Image 1 (cartoon, one colour):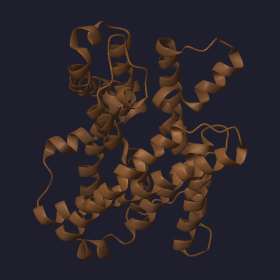
Image 2 (cartoon, helix red, strand yellow):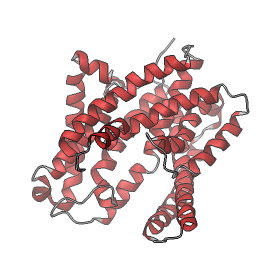
Image 3 (cartoon, helix red, strand yellow):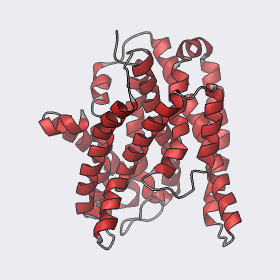
Length: 343
């Protein structure tokens, strides 16, 4: 029995490349501060927004999809405590270790022991994603054992995502948003056989058109909402709800188009994926962990911004970071501790 899913082996490398692209261009969309001597480039704003549009949701979707594969096909028998122990080792331990390393380079807050420890547990920088994903696994396990229709669960999770702006500790607020996509992956795995027969090129093209028609105006609306200042609590809540609703709409459509395309591509090619793509899959987690370290170092601790200027900096940063990440991931997996953290 194969322990690989071709659609995931195709999707995950694309998503990890989108992550590096997004972080390479995020300073033009307000995600990071512009380095000295760098000015805004409007087209780079859209490159950042497009690469982010459903990328993080796709990461979470893939995790839920693989979780369903492990349970339904590989027949893994998880207990709650067994799952907690497994995902703590896989997600929380690397998050803590790499957050400590991140703090040594980029921690800018005034140092207080309790605040620092809390930030480390929460995940510094891009490590926030790992404790959030940890919660998704645990909550999805609980949802699996609740005896109501799956469609009702998804509707409940959609409602929960709308109110994910509520301040909760330990990345639970983020988990409230992304749990919908995790469980959507878990849910759609069960319907893969039906989807293979349903998906065709015309439907994928239609989905792309719908995504574009949603993404552009809703992104502009979300940018406008960011600029709207209000002191009234109810107005703030409504603003956050509307912004999250807009994000959910185009992220769900984009994610489904992305996933359906991978199914269509695998079916239409009717051949195995190239070995280099399979090997790159093994390096995706390491690439995720290393990429922000490299980009932030290049952007804020070297003279590269001055040398390259506003137009070439993100392009060179993206290509350089991908190359360094691949090398570092390969070298890490040749060590015992590297295999423990990244394997």
